[in-house]
Length: 318
Image (tube, rainbow, N blue to C red):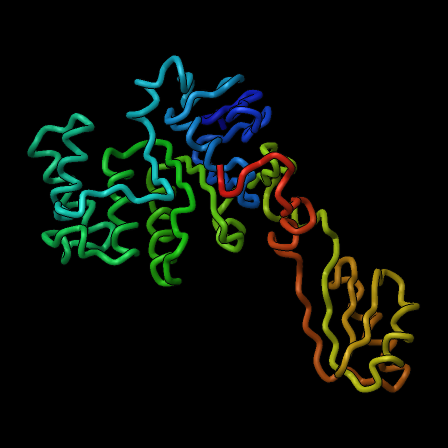
């Protein structure tokens, strides 16, 4: 697969603060790429540079082979952008907002009207087409914003925390829409999100940013596998005795006794679970319940990023 988004030593400084510090990566055609990290990691700054809204201090980036600075006029028609702030004219109806957006992208008036009607149906707002946007709920405003980004059928989408603050139903509707878009059109998606379970579910590959740099990159499965530790919660009588028995079982990294049972940290629970059960049964400590939990991207986040504010950096996301 050819690279659609490429960044090479991309840097952006604000005075003495280096919000993005020499970032390099590429995103393949049709890939869903998630950029994750704590507030202040530089995610939004990086996205704004890629979408031609902010000029890099140094380095370069390209979209579909077009330089984001030198060829900005060629980049913009090929991207759809959903930013954290929904910028809509509250006095217009949803239909008017989308029709105007189509005209701004060069569609003929008849085509712009037809496309607006089509997008309202796609995002589930056909019944609210003639209501003023100012009366829309947060989820409806986010969906109309997404419809604007998709209206001109861009091959590349940039989504900056598109579901933050939405209820689970609205979040699911947006991701279902985007999944269909990827399946039908091979759209490349670059997203930032604070909901790591979303990235785990929909992203083909993710990168963790911290203090302006990308500190780890890979598929969600690869990154979780690096932790190589599953958690096994065992409900059993005599937790202290059970912990002493399990401490000698090969493959166990840690055993913690707690009221009602023990917590075991172990590599590949699927392999080592049988010896654990056998050891407990041999000691007449029959387990009443066993729950196995595998690592999540939240666990990866806690291990490889620093959540403390770095010296000299202001608060908030850059």
